[in-house]
Image (cartoon, rainbow, N blue to C red):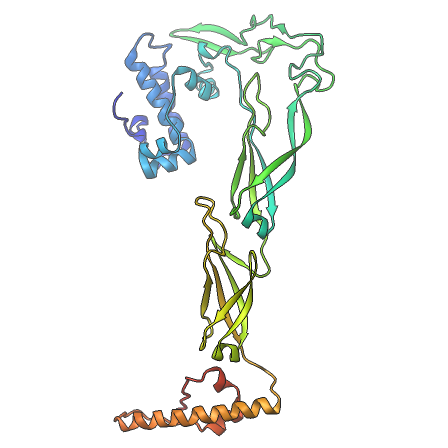
Length: 397
């Protein structure tokens, strides 16, 4: 059909159409272009397929969001390529056609394979297991094919019988005008077969509940909300259909020391004001063990130092992020007499330097009224404060 038309235009609805609006519009188009009503009409077939594709996208919230943002190209990038033919359409929308018209299509009469249901498992990991990956075993409650009858639903040694009501078709047909109306057989419920001797273990269900152990390999770098898919570990399909998948949702416990920001980790290290002023080398925990960190002279509160490549591996590239260390300078709260005397001496030295700077400012013609608090007064208030902020000037108005 060449370039694809806008899906909203195809269905004749606005971009804020509700689900009921979409369904009503699709019903009219499906009725108008249904192949049973237009035998041999290629244009009607194309219109029927086009309407089905538009409805398939717009009634699905996830596909609709992709289409609204990126158009047809976005859907192609997500793996959606439309329907291959009428079989795909009737397989996907069989229940809808039953709701619309009370019939599906002659093409659906024997096509009853159904994919198994997907399952979800919530898995909690430690911070370190999420960072470096691990392999664990989980226990999943799920349905499996009955080991006694192998899913046949029949007692061993017996087999299903053809339904006498529908002749094994699974549907009852009657003609109404242009249409051949088919309804599900009330006797076999669309199965086309009757189980006269059901399996004792599964009671004719063909499936039993089991607790299965499943091995899960966790890649390095997973985070809260990460989702792993284990193919074919869901519930078994119906009538020969493929099994569903198992989705493992990851939740990561908080760490006592590290915090995570994407692939980087952040931690906070306390140091003394002496270490901050004079510099030092200290041992800092990393994900791989302790590592020496150089504290530069004159380090200020809130300064951030970095270990490159000591963060968490990226799920996409495998490259590790960085570790950022926030410096927390601790001011002593209890001083002995010698420590206090030394700090007062240091404060006096700083006071003399600052007094000279203040005189130079005043000589330069500064018109601001500045009142200087004497070093002895400051020392009486807080003898160690000046040590923590040696370059600060205290102004008292």
